[in-house]
Amino acid sequence: MRISVIGCGYLGAVHAVSMAKLGHDVIGIDVDEYKIAELQDGRAPFFEPGLEDLLEEVLETGRLRFTTSMAEAHGSKVHFVCVGTPQLKGEYAANLSYVDAAFSELLPFLSAGDVAVGKSTVPVGTAERLSALITAACPTATLAWNPEFLREGHAVKDTLTPDRFVYGVPAGPAGLSAQNSLDEVYAVPLSSGTPRLVVDYATSELVKSAANSFLATKISFINAMAEVCDASGADVTALADAIGLDDRIGRKFLHAGVGFGGGCLPKDIRSFMARAGELGADQALTFLKEVDSINMRRRTKVVELTRELCSGALLGKNVTVLGAAFKPSSDDVRDSPALSVAAQLQLQGATVTVTDPEAIENARRRFPELNYETNTTKAIAGADVILLVTEWPEYVDLDPVKTAELVADLKILDGRNALSPTAWRQAGWTYRGMGRP
Ligand code: UGA
Image (tube, rainbow, N blue to C red; front, side, top):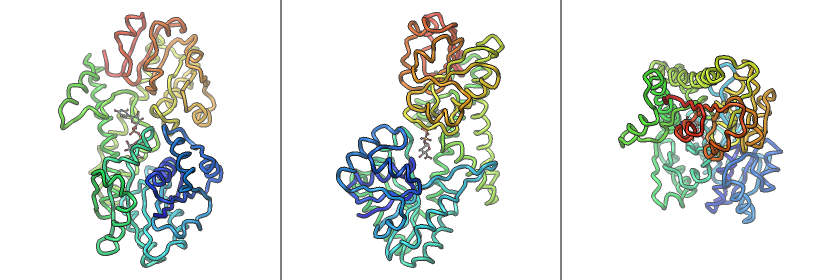
């Protein structure tokens, strides 16, 4: 099937490559000429394990091309819109200008029977509004909403073999036809038994908001438990192991630490609250405000613990921050807890050196005032205190004995509870975790 993918950022680039891998003829479209040139040359414009290899593989088949011209969407049967919905400056609500622009630019190139498919995370009600625009421009074209659940760092696998597909379609024959087109697009994963749920527009939009809110809530729940553990001398890691063994709870997303960041969970819970407010259902989501507050307190907690480790004064202390990305296997620093902590420490007088295997260039653009060092050994040399805030395997695997030879003082704050307290203490370190005695 000929498919267009509009917006070649994280979601779109991975989607375009994956659709070509599934055997479709794909045209990737973006307004950013640099991004398009990189992708067309077989280079991923961001770090995502496995993406570049797959990009090269499918470019060689001739089934994938990239362009800045929306006119090339003409002739595709299915058009996926994959543009971003960042948080509006100074507001909780999502900025829908990219989604609106992508759909309105696509309208002139729609043909009879085409399906325009929204994949972006949008406030409930957006699809209904866009559907009216599409029908007005091309009465026989249909809008479907097909939210994406991929995680950065696992994006290719999550796209090719997702946990489920959700289709939001209108009632009646147009909806059925859109559903059939999507079934054809996803024929390969569907044939291996991937569940597929067909729902109305509003439900499909809410599934995504609800899923990310639930994940954020789970993380903040365990971080709230970490606060209680700190107050009572208990160990949140053992607590998470114990409650996680209950199938109904599960151990995933119960890792206490510096909290969640990235381009999705923080802004999605905020835009969900904003939308619920517009709908008069704000009371239903006031708990998300608490989820957000608990999460933000974690960053402050890391700064306070670092100060404690520095005997009460950060001024003039050399602090090494291990990790800049919002999570491992990513070079994404959007709302990264690691950088937020690093910047606060620097503002309070510490000399902060940040290291990361992939995210330094992005971090430098965001926070040019911090010191950056690509080499872990050099970054650690002379540190008064080390902070592990992004649990890249190379940091989790650091040898406490060898690391001790590099630093000025043997103090480590494990902001992700990813290290063995016993091993580090045995090597002479003062070890502090998050909600661990
Ligand atoms: C998230 C969702 O997990 C995806 O399903 C969704 O598709 C995506 O947002 C999106 O909306 O596009 P992602 O932002 O890639 O994916 O990252 P996650 O793996 O969810 O991690 C988010 C943050 O939570 C990271 O900072 C991570 O370190 C933190 N986290 C995660 C914890 O602090 N504790 C945990 O137990 C798990």
